[in-house]
Length: 483
Ligand code: GLN
Image 1 (cartoon, protein in one colour):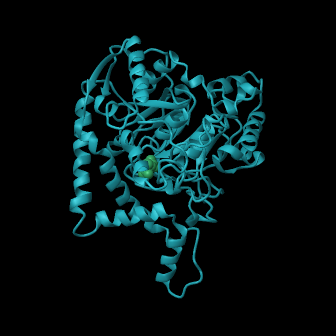
Image 2 (cartoon, protein in one colour):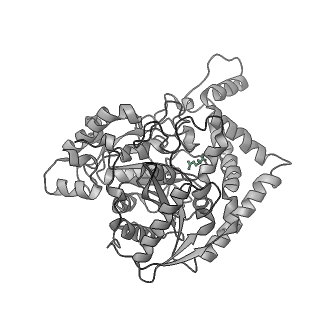
Image 3 (cartoon, rainbow, N blue to C red):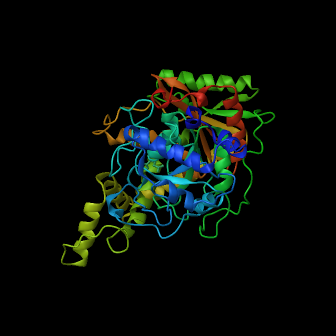
């Protein structure tokens, strides 16, 4: 059954339809893949037992028998929910996130909880309170983060799809580092109900899959309005695979964000892969325009301030009273708060709360928070202006292949700078689709496509056309391919 591990959702659906394999067999097959291989990748915090996985998903539906894994900051009813943090030790979710409810209704078996950076804060999955996840292409390297567990599981052929979350690039960055497809939907397209908040005005669930079409299949299940999320857009469910015919849209113009391609620190070999992808689009008939949006140079700085500010407010709720961990060896309430939070949160999360409260504090908030909000608005205006002239924007996802685990231990700012290529989409709420475009040092590298709000169908169509003429999605990490 070696072909199953790296099969697309589409191929698996056909096998089930033709009754060549049952849902139960598929779920058991992928559960076995985790058992055999996750010792090395360490993508999952928990893999559920097969009977309970099968019991919780409806027996028939478009995703019946097609299992996936979920980042451990998305609520699954009756399952633990840790955000890879000690502070949520022992917490069990009393309800399903809206996306989870929709997946279950569509028949999808949910296999487990994927590792991530604590509270999704990080870019490498080195900041999990449990363990570090490894890149399936080279186990000494990071998978990227913060949704590293979700993405590594798909890349290693442990399951065909996974959900992560995106606040600043946490699905697209690891997708690029691991050579698979990652989508950050338009803000408000997928309900945030049941997603543990990091920076609420940026947070979105993201999707990782092997192919563009598979990605569109999962989005079709989870997208659409939800009364439980006040920021959810009133969008009706639709079939996002509808336009995927392998062709670019007519008269397609691609705007290449030149200042991101030619930025200092960009490895020439990565640049070459991006330029090769651009050529491929030209061959497909696209018109390519080189543009630059100088204000985007500030995106990592803006993201740094705004994400910390929102995180500081959101994480105030973890105080030992309502959720998870509580230090019981204390005399006063205040001491209980302090000790619980000190013991429960890791160093990175604590640092972010300090910075967040600082940039919001009286006397400093105008200098930091208010200014960052102004630049955010400028970015929105500039990008919207450019998107009137081109259909989609193209930019790299990374400046270099994934670095070695531990390489940035004394240099956390380097990890923050990984957000540079991705976070502007979160800052202004537009969708971003990350696709693989080759290898550098035997490690995957990729690029991204961006479009106006709610242009997911367009991004998929453009990405799909590229995928049909390139081999990257058919390549898998050799050590996980059974011979
Ligand atoms: N690396 C970014 C951060 O640490 C992005 C995280 C995310 O998208 N969840 O904030």
